[in-house]
Image (spheres, rainbow, N blue to C red):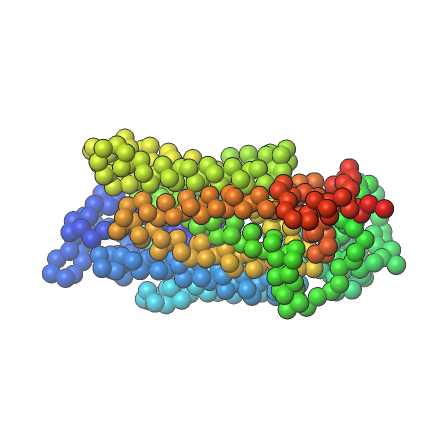
Length: 514
């Protein structure tokens, strides 16, 4: 599970307060008297302990935005660090810092220090997540990546459900934060058993260590008839084929590169610069916007669970659990029809539901405050809750396709740097969401209209990208160009002329016509 993502939502499963003189929340009354706040019979919550209500009710949103800004900082640092020093040391070092700072959050004496520590947690989290996800994909052959990519999503969903139960029984936010940090301590112990990426080792030219790592992995998995050695003495340094060599040795599959170009070792700066040259530039720009839209809408649905009609804990579980069928459906669709169609229709469905959430209360004859269940508006509140769950389902399908495409469209020589840039730019969406939702205080439903515009835009520009289904990961920018020429749904300019230079093969690779 992603403990920092649990922390993102830990302060949002209780209802937010408004500027009314008497506010009902969780069966307790909060009153304002003589410029002081009196909380009657309610357990400690960060909103209440630091009086983040009334004229300070915008500060929790600022806190969430700064946490998302930390995600952006970590994206800049984590990806290049993993490319230069390796995936394993980056993950282990980041986990140590993450646990130290995360445990300190529960001791924060004031709101300012609380915000600073959570900002640092967000940055370090990305230095853990980016290398770990890429490490997983780099050990897998193409046909297993979609299924295995589902596992992190399932464990994250399980973490959200457990967190909701913890939040129901543990209302003191300090003890609650310590509780949700406990999986991170366990993860740090297991991290020492994580092997280094064989692709990264080969890119450094250390064939002896690569061979040793492959044999250890084979022994741990009890592989039978595993070749020893895996790599011959004249093996060409090709960072992108570690998984294909291991799968070929075990299954007899052919998983070679798209063409015969071999990637050259690049520094972090060279890899970053190459991201902004064609054809990789198109991948960088489009996937970055897709990530902006995806994170904005994801947190838009999630951060409103405390104000949905009904029990906020039940709503939070519904919003999180719906990710399970969404991810499973997305994997089945990706394997059957490719990445682009699920991405397109997922954003379309999310956009439609957000438009309905924004305008439906105005169509029933009077202005009903969205997500607030009243005696007259109880039915519409339930409808809006159902629409939010449906929208999250559609978004989950689109986000799954985005995750797969980020790992499959960037060349091996710049994959971590490309992932880092996409995460960095994409965090604009998550950073802006809490403040965007604050606009509803001035015009109800405005935030969902804005997010719907982003959804429809992301839906449209997704057609620019090539479909990566049954295609091995590209090794060089030339391989990316071949994917555009062969696999793109809509082509412009000279693309159709270039297409004639390539032919497809049964195992998914592209080859130049002789």
